[in-house]
Image (tube, rainbow, N blue to C red; front, side):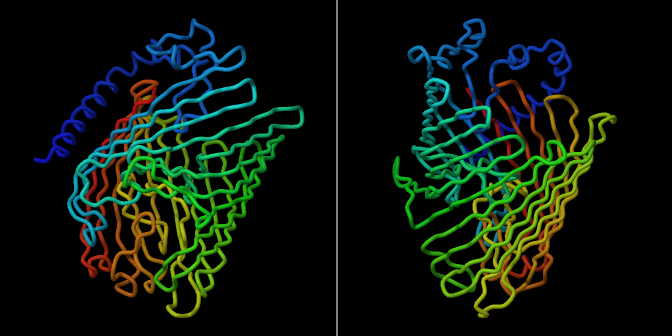
Amino acid sequence: MSPARHHFAGLLLAAGMSLASGAHAQTAASESTTDSAVKSPARPAIKTNRWQEDWSALANPALRTEPLDRLKYLPLGDAGYLTLGATLRERVETNNAAAFGVTGSDDTYLLQRLQAHADARLGENWEVFTQLEDVRAFGKRQRGGADQNRLDLRLAFVAYENTTAQGTFKARVGRQDMAFDKQRFISSRDGPAVRQSFDAVWADWETGPWRILGFLSQPVQYADHKAFDDTSSGHFRFDMLRVERHVLGTNELSAYYARYARSSARYGDAAGEEDRDVFDARYAGTVGALDWDVEGMAQRGSVGPSQVRAWALGAIGGYTLKNVTWTPRLGLQIDAASGDRHKGDGKVETFNPLFPNGVYFTKAAYTGYVNLTHVRPSVTVKPNARLSVQMAVAGQWRQTTRDAIYTAPNIALPGSAGVGGRWTGAYGQVHADYVFNAHLTGLIEAVHYEVGRSIRDVGGRDSDYLGVELKFGW
């Protein structure tokens, strides 16, 4: 057995034992409120975006109750402080048919992501944040662009924030994160191993129920030849103007226009300079036990001499039975994205998912948000305050058989365009999240995908995935 498989077996066993013991002890733990986040609400929670944490509460020595807390608040003169921190994520995955076995094979490997950051708060208005990231894919036979990136600059920006009676103004300049809504199309890509950054200038104005923001950016392009070799340039641009408003309480209505431009692109029916105008609208909210999130996007522009005419629609809704044991949530997700219907007609109808999070459907990343219809009912239960379990099934079709079948993020299965019918298959999914404490979380996900004939006709087969993850934040 390979070292990665040994690591996988050990991590799976340890995670299973920890989940079991944690579930058994949860009631006592919740009654005694031993979690530091519960005892000291002034301490910030560890977040996915570490720059959003405010550790100024540790100016009070009485709140420095954990090891190395003195490094979470290092005074800088009379009006500032420096915070140091780190995040380590270990994920073991096994997949018996990556890309349905058409271009991949049986693979078991360890994905490791290590981040270290320094966050300087200078007075009431200024922040200087820097984060380094090292990502390794141990034992992975086929590596994509989001699998490995040896030591490099992940984030480095200067931020300014000022609140007045009229509202709050925010600005950031430098390498930073972008993530919106359900992260269907614009994300920090936290799901895969290598996160997505943008070299950008960002401005934001918030007043009452309104928020208006805009940015000019060059998405970071990742290389893994040596340390500190990631770059961005004017050959790839992404800019946006966005408006948000709270309506009917805290429900959110938003819309944005964005421009996506890169000097070289290739699709099944076009190649050349890509220039897309992106129009997006979203409405999300809750009423009682009902929740929803609906988003639609239209894309216009050109790829070389061809015109772009593409669209996508995503909807997630649910109903939570709040007075039932384990508070089950009954959910339904529907997604659709256009594909190219006619070859050689001077139009590109293949949807570009922009900067998707890569694991929007499942951690297995079998499906890209291109040329598809996807229907997924689910049930989510919470046996206790620390554990959440979701079970789902889904069916998938192509919008058009003239275009290819796509795996995440938008990789066409070779030979699939024009082959077979619309039905591409169905999958079952079980996903469990567990919070061990304020610093350590874990998850387990299993997926079985039964492929349709259109995938079998190009050499694909049924696929099974299992992933186990532990994430520690300090």
